[in-house]
Image 1 (tube, rainbow, N blue to C red):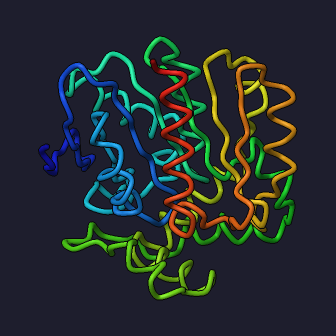
Image 2 (cartoon, rainbow, N blue to C red):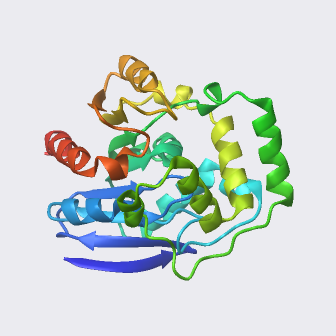
Image 3 (tube, rainbow, N blue to C red):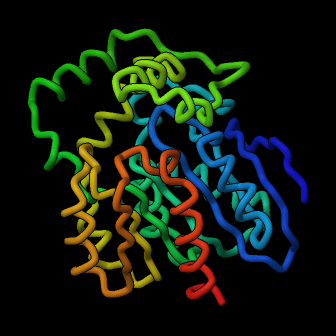
Length: 267
């Protein structure tokens, strides 16, 4: 098994190789984090799959860009496509969490032939319907223009330690902003609130898994239940004691249930 850090057009990613004939899993982290969120998942799944976890643009070891358009979800999707092409991967399962779920939607819209299955963790198709505050949108626009831009970190935060410290949501948010830069954070948050994913979700025919915490206060689980009713190829797994940070807080349960699902749809 091999783990290395690679770069493609300024995008950093790690890969763990099982064997050439194995299926590939791609892990995409949430806003303000980096690929270390998936460290435990990499170790677990690389026994049977080839695994790649990316530092999204503006995060971790990846490049920092300063314009709002640089952080459109279509741009993140292009980054994913470039990494797959470099690694000569024709098909994969893509795993998204919160913010990065919208990258999955953009990717499946443009490159459906490259997707074996989709896994959405803590998903809402139209976050602007949850957070409707005009004041928030105005603040994000202002911050996107005047806030200091972040620089690439030489030693990005290791998010595996966050769950050990049991940080508050506010403290985690402030660390995330510090890690990536307030201007970048504002740009990404604005794109998130503007995103409308329902038209794409309604067209998905690919095997799709949604994993959602019953205690998620960021995106209520009712949204995931609504998606399952609309997308015939989808399945919902509810994490009884899961919050929005279930990727770290409930990792073992999620990995176990993901493994069972993947065995069924990829075999």
